[in-house]
Length: 248
Ligand SMILES: Cc1ncc(COP(=O)(O)OP(=O)(O)O)c(N)n1
Ligand SMILES: Cc1nc(C(=O)O)sc1CCOP(=O)(O)O
Ligand SMILES: [Mg+2]
Image: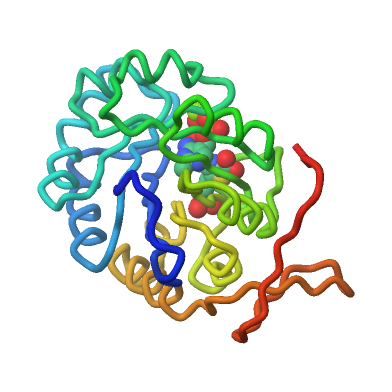
């Protein structure tokens, strides 16, 4: 995953960020990961195993990390900076209840990617960016069955962030090919998905293709429909920059 911010002039600069299912059998999952990564454009893969031992995570890293890195796709481990460093991952993702960003950075070193969950909070995102995070993640944008979520983010947050900040932003939570356009148009640099790829009825390759196509087709301009207080997108030259106090 490129650490620099993609050009604002390219509406399709938004890229896919795959997050694994929370439980998997590495030998069975490896061909599915190959299928997904060979189907289209993917910037990075996050290994997100919940309720697994360190050794189970090590075994999954050994099986899956080379598949991503051989394809120049960044391999990021969720939650575990020490394991991420030990296992040669390209980065780590930490949430607000995990190892604090500054400790994760010390463990991983300056060249690694360290991303931070910021829920729907402008304040958390500003702090993470000022501390040096490589990306901030906002969510959940839509209902999801993959994880119990307490926070709900709206596309306006992505638009505000991308107008103001250089640090890339990741959108996560219930994102599908059918609903992702407003997030792309609002300025998301990456769309992080689980079920839209691993649960796609046509298989993960079809999931990646559908998301790549939806990202490419998303309108480039962002308009707020103030009458309904909902974010709507219009493919015209109008621009709007929502500005307000921190909701988070
Ligand atoms: C890209 C991305 N964004 C958010 C999360 C969620 O992290 P966290 O809040 O720590 O919750 P868990 O994923 O650890 O359950 C993420 N993993 N990745
Ligand atoms: C891991 C995770 N974090 C979220 C957050 O809001 O921080 S939502 C989420 C699950 C994303 O899975 P799916 O694409 O299947 O909805
Ligand atoms: Mg976490």
